[in-house]
Image (cartoon, rainbow over all chains, first blue to last red):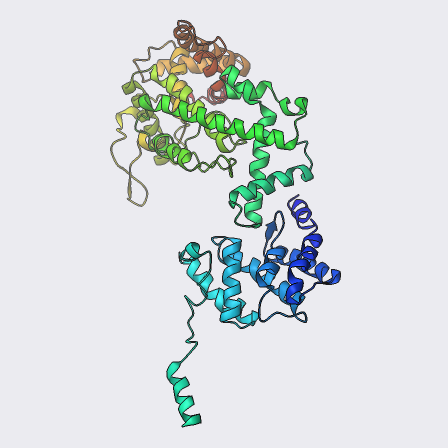
Length: 176
Length: 348
């Protein structure tokens, strides 16, 4: 019985909602074909099953598309593939963060890290950035709530991103 | 359950939205199962009774027994049934809390830790943490004190309410006796357990009162086990139903026509009971015990009769008769077996 009703839920069609998002994304040069939309929706079901989650209502895919469509690192060639990976990462980290974080907070956090730290590298987003942040959340960090997950991207970053001294040294070597 | 999954899923979906405060579109399998459990629990509650019936009779459990088909007869949709059931759960929780508060001021645990911990320490925690909306099926407590009614098939507030009602009945029964008398019977029972442990289980089965020689031993004294380790066992440590222990003791006194003020049975009384049980068949012994119990229960009914608010059906004696009927059957079988084997002295 458990399987049946959960499968029923996941079989609810998301196709129309995903296709509707083309109206929003086409101004960024991003359009999903029906085949792409089908693939994203079927991968959504796999991701949910793998992460042992049940989704109600509209689902998260349209929200992911809306959040990421203006990204500097997504173009038509990697659009569908990136959306599939992003939804997998999203469900994984809903679990890793023990549902302490809302959908919007997590999406804002993911987008910011994707743009400013990972520069479009999904493996880095999944394996490093979100992993560190999820550890902080499990340890009790709730500072992201006030900003809805914005401005949090580098809060727990362990890597020094910009070494001013090294930059100046390189400049000196090059010019003078 | 007469509802299709397609009807239930939207209800669970709405409940999940409330649970996440619309901040999450997905939940874990475990949470979804919990929410589905909550929906089914409420629908089941509605199937067992309508809120109006519970109100009218003032007796939720009685009403639930009388109206098993309310939902199906009215042909409520799953959503309506869920909402009606959720209202029943809330109402029952309020009633249970009210009843608990009524019992608590005069509650007497006779220093028994199991009863005290379950009723005085445990139940407030239940009411503190019980989630009427998202997890009404969770009983939260283990409720270690064993009541005589089988409530193992119940869960959530159903179980707790049934438990509280059992405790109310037990308290009414025990309050008829002086506190010191109940304490003495329980202490003697504890002594019997110690004797049984010391003799490796060959000394006796545990009944109500004990023989004269055995009662020389004080339960307050520490005992020594085979490893020379000390252990203590008194009425505080009993993990069994206190009402049943006292009831058996009283009923045997009535059977032997012995005053309750003389807790210790003499050899002649053992012989009398043994003879009585040996000569009679099990149904006859059971009947005698029932008759003796009726004499006792009448005392309660006579007192209730003066109270016009108490209906004939809800009189304490009648309720006690139902509540303790299993004990009477068990005691009859034990008496018969003991009499046939000539060991009734050990049983009493």
